[in-house]
Length: 531
Image 1 (cartoon, one colour):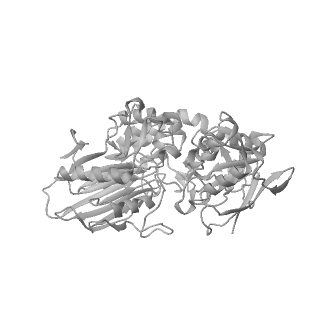
Image 2 (tube, helix red, strand yellow; image 1 turned 180 degrees about the horizontal axis):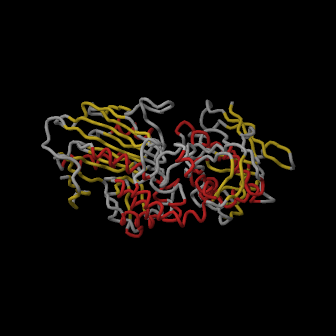
Image 3 (cartoon, helix red, strand yellow; image 1 turned 45 degrees about the vertical axis):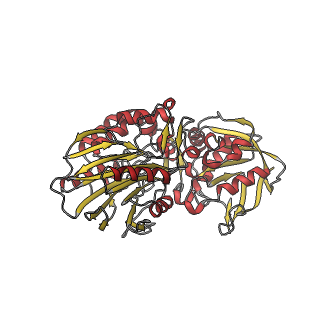
């Protein structure tokens, strides 16, 4: 039998995952996902929902039905198996917009997950929605560095760690949530995100005292932070990561890191760090052999591509079909057309001018109307590309799933420049603050020191570009998330005047702009000149 105890007190019995008496060596198979972002249905290569024609042509990837098949097949092979998620199950499709996590809880149970950690997007609709999700979930939702007050509705719902008994051995699981969450989501004033390293140290010590010597961390912190934690905290064996949507692989072209990336902890033991990209495209599979002391002595693995070779599970397809009615009434409406692909890939929009970003910024500036010269959209708020042909409302909502409002305000030229410098300060970490712009252009030198990467800032006025005046107040349009300081845009929050945060929803403004200007050929035009 596999038993699970949550925190230090609660225990219950669940279905068997493995059997047999533990030997000196112990084998564990870890299946994992991260940043699924509510891709309930299969997706195209652009991470939008795939249609029946795409399925028939074998061009679709992922989706919960394929994910369920891959997990069930792995369990059927026997052995000791855990299925884990590195956070950000929420936000990214109309299924989340419609069901706010209730459907996600059902599908995770059907697929066979054992535990997950909390990502920043689990807070996008505030702690109340997350609380409802946790209450509906049949698995532990863990995070060691979240301290929730009673007023949040989350107190006592989030446990720092859990102990699973798999095949006669105790496995400790710890959750970690990115410390950036207050800046990039909406946890509210009654939820506190603490230092992840200190939280890990405490949970590792607690698990060790409970006799657990094999410890897995589910960390929604980004690979860069996971590597730091692996090298700073002893006692961790595996980190199942998320947040920066990286593909770890030994065979797939353009993978960011090998699978696993091996780091050495202060105690000299190896720590295996993995991720499996995003959007349900892959199921990570890490096989680890532990010695009697609980130290990883051998390992191998590779993400499983959830492509057309994997048959979707019929019961999960039926559940999705049952839920799709409310979604279909919105997403099938055509709003316009593109003559070429609008690139909304995170690799582009978080590092350089991207055609989807330019289109969105153009739409924002158009919607703001007279008196506004500059539009700035965070690249991290752009979640997918759209291919050529008819554009549906569903596709627009997949690109812009956060239901942000268009926000307008006045800001000095000096604060605009400083905000742009902030926006380009963490390109090397793939942060979502990168500015996609309209009505303004600038030169960008990523080799220059942070704080001096922006030059030659020009603003469109009277049909011509003119140098920005640091002393002048400009009309700026953005989204309400950024205006309130999201993604670290503190100057938007602290220095803005004539603020109005309650314009139309951004996705509605973009859909309207596409409709009025179709057919559109999405393109970049040198707004951000890379030096």
